[in-house]
Length: 204
Image (cartoon, rainbow, N blue to C red; front, top):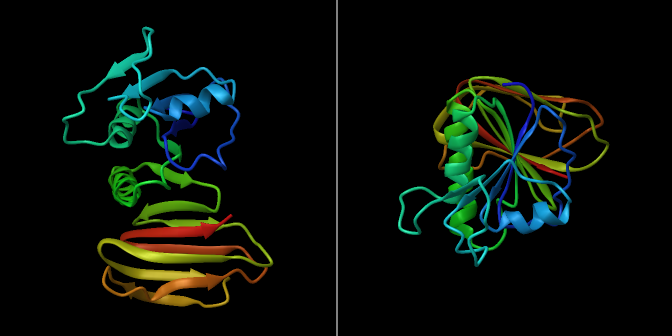
């Protein structure tokens, strides 16, 4: 499916801003509906158990789930986006508030990446990306930081080029933050992993 599926949750939405194009799709995950309404955007789907929203909205685009469930509202929203065929997903409102939900959302991003989805999450201070067996380019900046972490086990064949600190054919593990707090140096930063998944956190 062409276009971007935007998913807005109830977390840190201070940096939430986007323009919905005709080919895009918007999912309000529970309390994220308030933020979407504030942007003047009509969501295509409103989904969740609506505990954070505080009421059940009305309409024919509502998907209501029980509070007692195995998946988070964000996971359900990502699964719906994948089911609809979207390969590009951007999450807002996925951090802040409860730390356990932030970690859950990072795991949700890993699930999407493993399933071939280009996914990122944004808040007021950072952009979070997860990549699997692929490469990514961070646009050049004269200042600012980024960090790279292994997700879901060992990440092999890791390359970081164009930053203050480089890595060639390295290995990252989930129990050692070897590649934390790198810096931009005025060049595009190329990050790749041959086997495994990486979480990349870039300062906005």
